[in-house]
Amino acid sequence: MALGAQVSAGDEMDQEIFGEIRIENRWYPENPAYPNQSELASGIVFEPELYLESVHGWSFTLVPFLRYDSADPHRSHADLREAYFLLLGEIGDGEWELRLGVDRVFWGVVESNHLVDIINQTDLIEHPDEEVELGQLMAHATWSGDLGVAEVFILPHHRERTYPSRNGRLRSSLVVDDDHPSYEHGAEEWHLDFAVRYSQNFGPFDVGVSYFDGTSRDPLLQPQVSQQREGELVLVPHYEQIRQFGIDAQLTTDEWLFKLEAIHRSDSQNLRFAEEDFAAFVIGAEYTFYSVFESAADFGILGEWCYDERGKDATNIFDDDFLVGIRVAFNDVQNTEIFSSFLKDRHYSTSAFVIEFSRRITDQWSADLELFSLANVERKDVQLDPIRRDSFLEFRLNYNF
Image 1: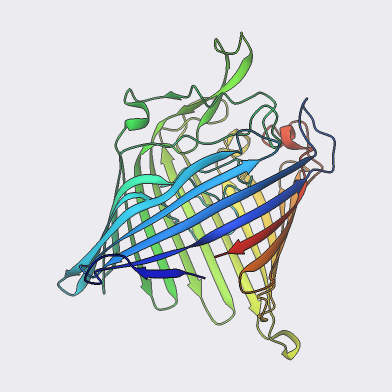
Image 2: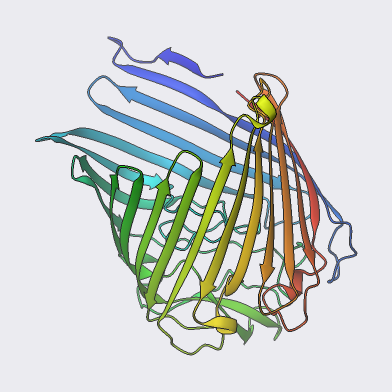
């Protein structure tokens, strides 16, 4: 429920306040791999949103984020997800928009590995699927018209990735010292990054092409002896200067979706800390059966192939993996949905299984249940072996106001 009010003389400003309060409980059924880790983590999340709109053609959006977590002090954190002014107008046959401040931008079409999505930093302590993003300071200009949509991004400040603490689950075998990151460029987090994107639709075909030049959002974790931690061996995030070309495309028919994300990245190091330009892609398809058994429910099945030409030297888990998934939307009054996926590595026996269930209880209350499970993790699978015991079951109770 949104709260609306006139807040200035002469009825020149509209205000809306809405958002979500979320109570979470996460249970890890296996014994922890490292000392002082907990089998149960409880927490609360508060994410309000304030929207102001002026009759003079500008608006302001503010979305703070607050989390308390009982088990991991790093998960207890605050962030400014969005805080930007929006100006807009017309140029010829097209329209322009200018966003100034902190915002979140998502690029991509696939379910598994969002290769082209490079503007915002990942809030990794929120979830291992890397779907949640930190707010990014930017100037974002957009022009849209019959010829498509052109976007320019000026990014003056780099956000560092968040990591679990020593006591947190889903952590690496060595503690990540994210308080002392290193940067390739002397300006460090204040290097001025730049990105552009063009997108257009041609009937059932949607395509976007993008270019990014600046500080990588994906840090290399370099082992170092920490002077601040009494000579302890830790992992220190190192952020390189990279260039990335990307393309995302989707073909939509009545029942089928065909999807593609592909990138080429230059000046990047691999898992062995050797500089290597590389290409990677995700290609997939989804088919939906509508009104299954003459009911209101829709049933979808999808498959994706993730490939990175660096192979086992890739700095993420998607070097050569297949994902299959099932999506069920009951289209009922409670908006009940189920999504499950199975990810299998071609080189290792490692697999990951996820099932998500969501249902609205009342107009303001809803609930989510999620199972994240790892199986047959090989010791030589260095990306996932540290969290081999960190499968979890999570329940979330959401209140929307």
